[in-house]
Length: 147
Image (cartoon, rainbow, N blue to C red; front, side, top):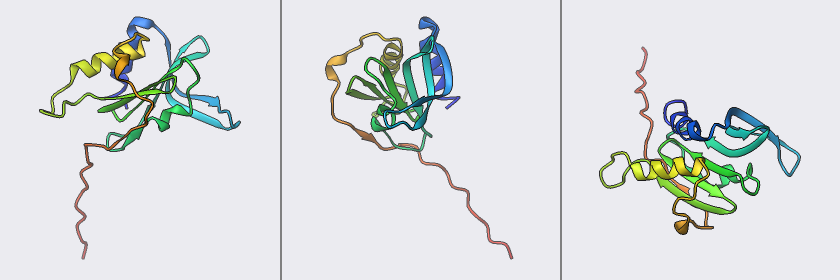
């Protein structure tokens, strides 16, 4: 989270100056306590909520939608893939270009604009939830037998 996600959020927030709050706790509609990993607050009011997952985990809009209220921008990310959510509409982007594996700067710009609250190509958003499989697999250490 601190190497892949926080730098993007900090850069986007540098222009809008919201207060970053880690493990932001709120009460759900079902009267249960729940915490989102990062919330960008205007006073006490959340404007952007970000749910961070490990890089080897799949992500989907359902992982952030339970935290969102109308007008609050939400993202769920594993650092490589980002799912943006706003008022029931969803868009998934990747910071890794599928063809050559290099950084996708257009997607990065779209994520930063979304966090800042700017409209950026909302024509290709959907109401259909998408599950994104992880592309990075952890390397398991080989266990040696002891005699």
